[in-house]
Image 1 (cartoon, rainbow, N blue to C red):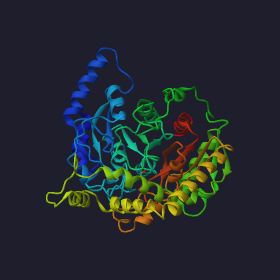
Image 2: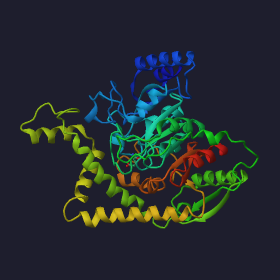
Image 3: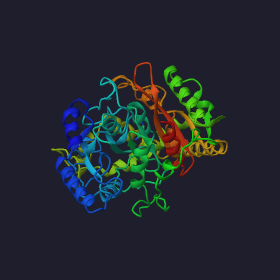
Image 4: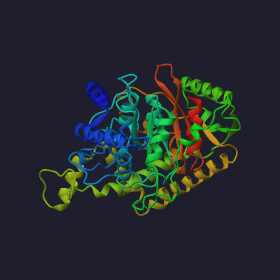
Length: 452
Ligand code: GLN
């Protein structure tokens, strides 16, 4: 009950959880005790965790941060939830998030904003802000999240913890409520790289119910961490520094923390080399065509017929759809559905959607060229530390631009990790982002582990 009690005490101020499943958690904890007594425990048996409310959990409210699903009790578990249950992990409840994972500050949630545990007047980042705040405030030792354009790495950076988004296709999307399917990827939050490695090892794996799931043998990401360490455990590791990420745009305090981290990486034996990602600056425009296009299609299923919010009064069927959707979705979700419908419409498809797909290809190729000159790429996770609640509320474009370092990684499908690397002038955490080649999770986690 240690974590449940901390949630009771601190969640009213943080708003990190939408649902606390006290009964379910206690039952799972008792079952875990029995497994441990029977000598059948795994690494996660009895370990409490929080699930982002984007993951379907059988018998437990699953809202995706939206009024649309505010009455939705899922009849089944997401693949990831099932794997973690089978591993004996204890689900504490469902973490708050931006509505349908659209946002970078957690302010678009129907359940209200999450507060940054380091400074309650600041945002925790988003969209997995509840998961990150819960781990940072030790309301849960580990948490799941999803990352479509930075939603694991950015809140991890803002909350001073570690978060990893694996290679696209490594973690099953089955039962993970879809935002932009070609970008969405489940990820892990922990207080350390080791905790992330433990959680990711249990989440990853082939699932025939997800058509983009990769058929690869399961890996134990903790194995490499245990390798014998020397004074220079990263000897031979080549870290690429993208010229474009270190140009203008990064706040001075973030730059200072990132450069200090690179000094430490060199002391651990790594070398650094300048690389270039010439098309990375086009990642945001490409993303804000592709992601809304996919979201407008994915969110068409929420019509108030079989589940979810239905307007109390309506005329004919079309009126019921219209009113239910008008009432059920918040402003940011509506904005993206409109943009997505527009860029996919006849006459605009070629001009916007196809162009964005071409940019996506160029961005992915840039990373492949860069990764021939280095083993992993490092830079800031975000241009600034966590901003104040409400600061970007009326300026969605400014908020979109803040994802400049994370979004390109999703477009390329590569694995990315954010780890804490110091503090800004305001006392808020700064994150260092590491990006690896496809299936480079072990290398990323090992580097982060040696650094911390
Ligand atoms: N902040 C980005 C967006 O608003 C990314 C969100 C995410 O990764 N789910 O779309």
